[in-house]
Length: 181
Length: 277
Image 1 (cartoon, each protein chain N blue to C red):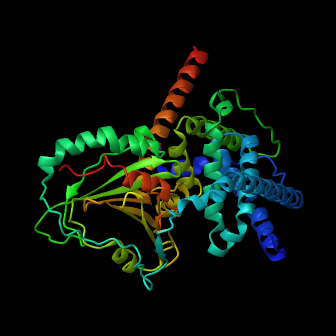
Image 2 (cartoon, rainbow over the protein chains, first blue to last red; image 1 turned 180 degrees about the vertical axis):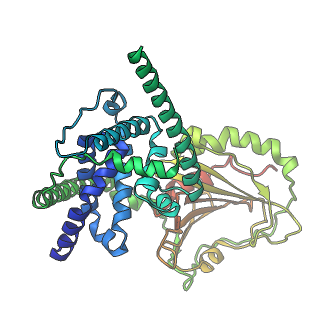
Image 3 (tube, one colour; image 1 turned 45 degrees about the vertical axis):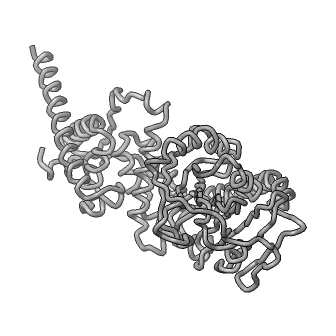
């Protein structure tokens, strides 16, 4: 890789590493795995950088690599057996507003637990559309499918997510009632 | 949960992300190291493949000379400019009587010939048993037919998979007197680039071995075809043409012609492969 290309890639990596890791986290629900996915994706992007930078859509290409890396990772036998049903650790922040922190933690736990229950490709569509704010066309390009498929996957993903959120909220209400009685 | 709620929730889901431990210098060094290692691995792989290919193809290359049909009385030409004229093989024979054929009448004979002779012969030349397709020949007008009114030229092809991959054998059976061009004319009228060898056999018949083409005009695919015509003494002709059926995005693949002249000659000179009397 030439010096100019290397410098270009370095700038891209520094600028996009954090956002790629966030997206990876919403895909997989685990910061450590997200870090690995981000590193692997950037490594793959490095191999293809001389082609990518000419096309001027390195961000979209990086997301595409990230998505495929995650889907590939999910297919590995040792990942299939993995269950994420443990309790999330609470994080203390003495400077934060307790009410705000409590609300955020509730939202985080709720959305994270619910999102994990949505099938992977539907989850990916939801993250790309509502977290990355990509258009249907851009999501289709990242997913490598048609716009119609993106729309249908979005609709199904939303239904699955709402059902998961409702189920979690109902469980929470039941537990609260049991504690109160 | 509305779409806006989902957007907000997703943003809140990552609010407590741990600090990013990303050192670009370390990353770039590792990436460069992996790239070098990958290149070295690819070089080793390519070298290994080259060695294997050389070992595998060397015997075939050393024996490729056998493909030529050689004889003291043979004549040959490499293009249409020079035509052989020393065979002393009058064509077409004057004393043969042509007979019209219909596929319906000949079908039982052809079916039994396929079962007993053609299909086993094809297997003997390397076709995988279960890969051999159907042979559905038909009597059809040919540019070489002397009189289109008499149908005595049967043509048909069969697909199969041989040692070099997907292949096709085109079979031509011309009844006595039906095939117009003489061996000399066959060799004279071929398009460039081509090679043609006409050889008189000890039994008085003539074998014409033709190789057509090579790379297409654009050079993108191999369009070659190798054919052996057996001009029999009774005035009939049996032709066996071999070509690759490996197709890629640009057309036929560059896998060469599946059968050599020895194989095609064995098929074309098989006396049991013929039209019914």
